Structures are given as C-alpha cells and as structure tokens.
Image (tube, rainbow, N blue to C red):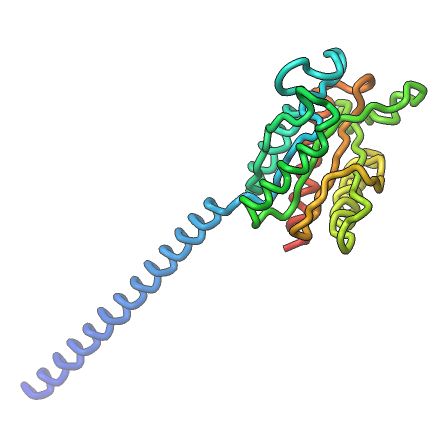
Length: 246
C-alpha cells in the first residue's frame, strides 16, 4: 500500500513538472510574439518617406489673391500641406519640400525645381513617387465646370489635370497617373480632367520612379478651399495606388 502511494506521488510530481515546463514554454512563446508585434509596430512607425512633394511655381495663389505671391510661399503650398497631412494620416510618410523656385527669376523655375528633385532622390533613394503641385490658368472662355465639380456633400472641389514628361521611361509616370486619375473619376466622376504629355516637365535622370505634375484647379475659377478638398480625395487615390503597387 505504501509502495503504491509512493508511485502515485511520484507520478503526480512528474505531471506537475511537465505542467510547469509546458506553461513556461507557452509564456515564452507568447512573450516572443508580443515582442515581435511591438517590433513590427516600431518598424512601421519608422518607415522612411515614399512620396515627395515639390512646387516648380512655389508662389502660385488662388482667387481672390493676386496670381503669385510677391515674396515667399503661395497658396499652392497650403494645398500640398493638406495633401501631406492626409497621406501621413494613412501611414504614407511624405517629404514636402518648400524650396522656392520661381523667385527672384521666374524663368529659372523649372531648372531649379529639377535640381531640387535630383537632390531629393539622391538623399532619399527609397522614394516611390514625386508630385509637382501646380494650379492651372485655363482660357477665360472655359465654363466654370471645366475646373470645378460639385461633390455629393454639396461642397465644390477643384478638378485635376495630370501631366507627365514625354521622355517618361517605360511609362512609369504615365501608368501611375492613369491609375490615380481613374481612381479619382471612380470616386467622383469628372474630378480628373485627364492626362497630358508635355516636354516641359520634371523627370528623374537616375531612377525610374513616377514623377507627375498635378494641376489642381484654376486661378480664376477656384478657391484655396476647393483645391484643399481635392487634395483630401487625391490622398485616398495615392494610398490606393500604393496598396496595389506593393
């Protein structure tokens, strides 16, 4: 009887030891998973910027202000800041370069902006999209709805015209512009005015990434508020582009 009790106690002790070992292993595994999750979250929060915003004509304004700011930044940069903030809220890190290119010599704006793009790409080789923000200046005979659209909310938004360089390598800029333009028109039919191929446009000489010029609204027909409303929708389109691009 005594021998049976000893065997029984030994078996119980063995099972207890196994329980401790298994529990310790499980806790260790859980701890490792939690650590990995936290590390992943840290990696996500420390991701480098993938979008760069520049302004060839940095001093551009919207009505009722004068067409160009006499000194410093124009209202077009406020549209860019709105776009930047919306992109960041969707976990798309962005560099918003506020270098002034069209002052004091307006004719040097494009060459100076190209220099900025080259420096931006050299310092940030991980960038996947460059946007050159403009506001348009359409002919006076165009109707209001040529550059303005009514949203379902009742607010007005400025329409967008895309432009890419005719030397676009492998159509990378054209393909990106087409995706974003299509997304805008699916979200708000008519919000995009389409895509134009031009020779006077920023380009990358070292890396094949999309560089797109965006004309958001018009000086005479659109306000800053309408352009900012479009920037918010544009950020959603860019976010969708990256979800597919990845």
